Image (cartoon, rainbow, N blue to C red):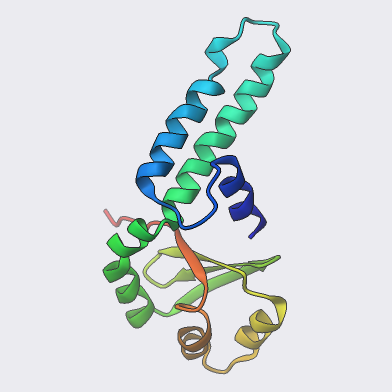
Length: 149
């Protein structure tokens, strides 16, 4: 959640994320923090490189959790959560990462330790996740399924 709030603050987003507004703000920030605006040796050049990378990372992250992106990928997400098992999961802070048996990986934001412990201790983890995690938390696709040759 901290990461979401940090990026929303950087892009001056107060309410729901709109891809049109996000793209416009992204372009302004990239122009503002582009390292080519500064001469070599200028202390602002190093800061501009760091901020430029932060702007790019923030843009890609916010696009991945935008309602339009989620809506466009809803069918694929539903297919994954309905038909795939859990291959692996990881929990750090309030971030739960689940890797599914099809190779796709999703991040769920705001999952506390108590709920994670219940998931671990559940005798039917997929069923537990369907009931209490998959559609209850803000999520984003963190990795596409591995392509088989």
